[in-house]
Amino acid sequence: MTTATGTPAAARAAKRPAPRRPRGGIRGHEAAAGWLFTAPVLVLLALFLVLPILMAAWVSVSDWTGQGNPFSGGAHFVGAKNFSSLLTRDGLARQDLMTSLRNNFYYVLLVVPLQTALALFLAIVLNRRRLAGRGFFRTAYYFPSVTSSVAISIVFLFMFSGGGVVNALISSAGGTGPNWFADPDGLIHILLDKLGVHSAPAALANHGLLGQSWWDWLAGPSVAMTALIVLAVWTTSGTFMLMFLAALQNIPAEVEEAALIDGASAWQRTRLVVLPMLRPTLFLVLTLGLIGTWQVFDQVYIISQGNPAKTTLTPAYLSYTTSFNDQQWGQGAAIAFILFAIIVALTALQRFVLRERKADAG
Image (cartoon, rainbow, N blue to C red; front, side, top):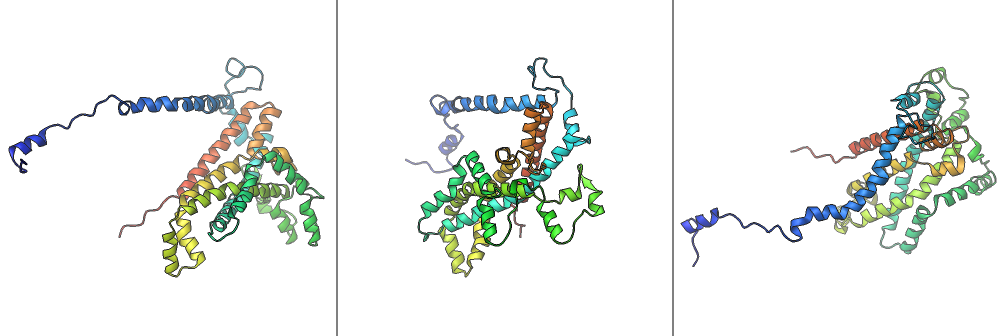
């Protein structure tokens, strides 16, 4: 017999507390099991990530020269001396840091947009269902990304040499190829020289930023750095292509079909339908590209070692040479933390620019 709602029996049933779930079994120990399974990873992160960062932080505020143990009397606390030598005091240390930042700025400015645009273009092409041999092209485009950076750098070193393939192609077209890894001239300075501007205007030569004149800041990437930029774009676009390709394949076909029915052209479908839906992947690609380009080291070490005339010097390579060659480990660690701060600030700025903007209410 059922009891109608509102009767005393129904009221007593409503007031009766719900039965408690037993705490035993797997569900009752989820937190402990979770910590148990993640403990090995947490220990590895603490040993090989957190602890080295803390050790480097101490070295950056000490005068350690690489001799003895920096944590048992081999180094003394000097405060912000290493950072002030790099950022505020005139000298070779500050000049080298600002030169490396200028070089890396142009490297980031060119590599990140070019590799992102190329990766997106390749992904859109390979996403076509009627394209024959898609598997082959995916492998071919991705292959440089998994090849040893040392091997690829050596290949590029031969390709861009004075008698290499690149200069041979330029000569066959009627031009004269430069001496790529020995030419310190900036591309913007070369262009201005062609236009008749052979020396720095007084306004640009007498004023500047962070120890560099505006004329030096506006030099553009050197010819040698241009070869490194080409190398970076070629080797990284394949990885980002796969990220874009996976995101494109997750876009429902009905969305593009609806835009096609509405009369949207291929460019309109890409700009108004595809790109907005790729925003999370675009943010990921730009963030990884930004971090990777500010940390460039191996290509510089193998190909140019900061030469010619320090026009390929980067903060990561400067940190290495300051520490291992000059034995100024405090300044080397300080450069690494300055680079870390730059990456964090630019990533936060990029996140702000690419954030999701809510539409204004009615």
